Image 1 (cartoon, rainbow, N blue to C red):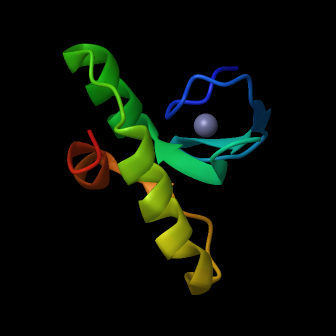
Image 2: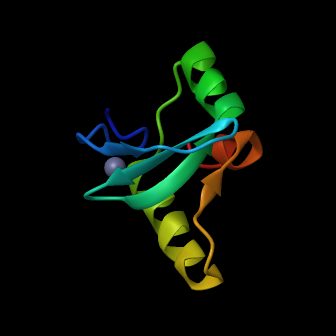
Image 3: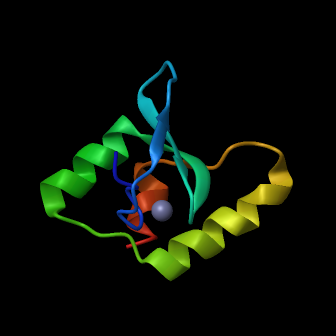
Length: 77
Ligand SMILES: [Zn+2]
């Protein structure tokens, strides 16, 4: 499927829970919540690719996979 951030062809990692996990060759691996996905569809939002990738990079040191929830998504458009 397409990366939610940059629309590059990405692989979806099977996961349980109310989120999708994607491995994008350009953005890396991240999770996005079902609520955030619904918001993007509803408002026709697009991620600010540079801003979002910077945020993803800043999360690398935490040891957890970055999760883009609805609050986070609103700050990355
Ligand atoms: Zn991407």
